[in-house]
Length: 249
Ligand SMILES: [Zn+2]
Image 1: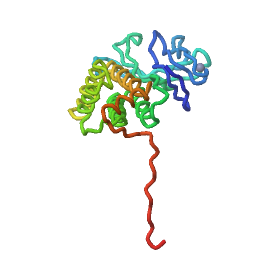
Image 2: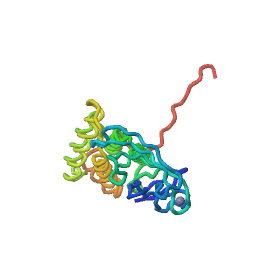
Image 3: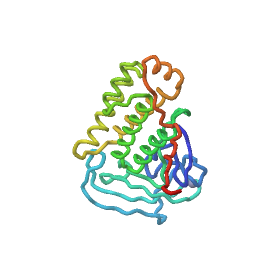
Image 4: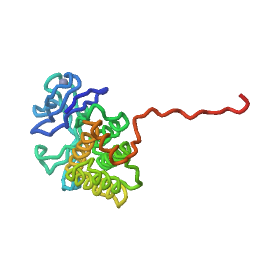
């Protein structure tokens, strides 16, 4: 896990609902993990309660709560959105601000545009936009394969070809095929459905495995691809701006 602070957004850990507060990193405590305590002593920081039967993360809940929490370390405020059945301790946390983003480490040689795509997936998921996050993970996979010469129109064909070239293992091939089937095709091309936290986390992990596969030892990967006669299209190559010809000048 890495930890970076970006203007109030903290990368490195997903906030967790624990008893009477939220366990998360606090930007004002230098990113330390702390507890943002709810109003247990009736000290006045309070909450907003909305009684409503609803679904979240494929479960039924009876209330939505917006809880103010106070950092046990420095006193900074935080706001949590929680779904529960009448007892906040058993609730499900949808989001928490200051934002803490669960991020997985990527190899240092990962091209910047691919790394950014992966991080955007994490950013989407951190605010509950898991469908958008899933689409970004799919896009990350597409770019990684394209970067290594797998340029067929359909991602499933590219995955199949990478498997046949043995540049990815059968395990990895199965993992990303599952990701693409569920989070790519179903989310992007079929009718609306929720992407659960569990589904996103699995896809997140599998996509990290693909990044490790290709960018931990890029020289070995390049050797295999050369043997297989793959043309490598570098995503991170500098794009030269098109020359603009101005008539009359
Ligand atoms: Zn703090």
